[in-house]
Image (cartoon, rainbow over all chains, first blue to last red):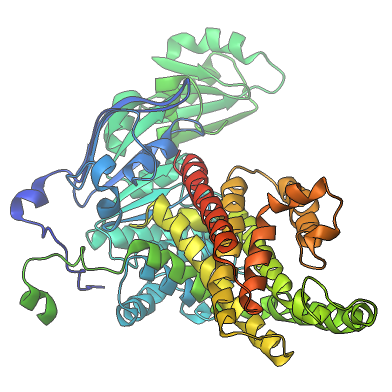
Length: 324
Length: 273
């Protein structure tokens, strides 16, 4: 999907191509007394897919809105494409794309109309928008619905349209805020596939999510965010290796006191977590640990051995689960 | 790089783009092209019906009993320019209420715009510019209807077009400023009930102000629609006195200006958090 870029006042030089696209130092966002983003540091490299993983209220959306130059920075510094959002906000926004959490589509217009209207905000010539729209509709598998009104489309289709729309200006950086929240599994997987292709085409992606499978699938690197701060940063594999064991044994004791059982089992493994409904035992070999549990004479209602996920990383770092 | 750009040299494409507020205004024009049919009733039908019912129907009764109404032999001639200004008020007010709230709360159109190179100022000015265009359209149609009814007696009536637009904007700007502060439409009902409708009835549209009780007259003269009505009427009937005309224009311009100033603040507070 090679497209001619719009004439740009500052072509990408070799030097510029090696600088991080987005740099935050001590980035802070306050709403009155409430601190939503509490001094975070990060650098997002060109061509990578960077994630912010955290529960609702972690400050992910506030961070995204600052990067998208839609929300003023309260403290620290932020540079997007080498520019300061406070001074060059409009210019930055002409080179990035945003897929917001809440739809901002025009429900009364058609799918194609929405793309036309958005492209015109960037002052793209109509002919150019139409060409790109055709390619983008094909890319997001919406070609058959091009002349349908947006209102009756499914949530997944609307989200794909929003993604297509955000690409009309051929942005260097695409920001996606919770892109698959509220979608059914099939729609989510289709979206992941499309985003993966985008990544392969060299578009830098910044994604926020509270779904650990999404973070694992899509992100080269991610920051675990909670309470406005970064708890950890790294690739999904690094984070799991650092903060979790290879496998997890999940036990359910129906009518027993999980905490009491945990005391008896505690010595078996290096780390365990007591959840309201389950006991998690972190081990290198889950099956082995399960046999040890049985040898101690315990009979759990159910036992599940699984690989560690980012959910476990989050639990380790914050003591809470991603989904509240 | 296109040939044009190469020829014009290093000046960036960025600087030569269509002004951003025009791009915002273009959105509303595009939308209207797709949805204009719904507005035919308020923009065209109602004004014509009012003119016919009040102007001709009621008018024939009135003319039968009095020699002049506000200096005019026919009630229809007295009424028509008043209705023009009132219609401008209603259209201006309407366009600044629900469409603004929808663009903030329900459809979030403004937020779609703000994710692009457009700024809050562009968003506001673009929307007000669209409302002005709409007012031009409505006022032009209305003047045409008035001419068809035979109530246009002076070339100065053409100036009723910009005056109509100004009247509409004098309401649209402050109401838009208000709309941006609201979380639901209960405030709009208040504006209708205690603002637009009383003004519509008592600002000199249907009967001269001096029919009101003495103590009420100065109050009516302090309200915006009175100035729009008086100015439109004087232009259409060809009886303009410079002094009062300047006062009417100044009043409307200042009100529109205050509205834009306030809207700038309320839009920014609501849209850039």
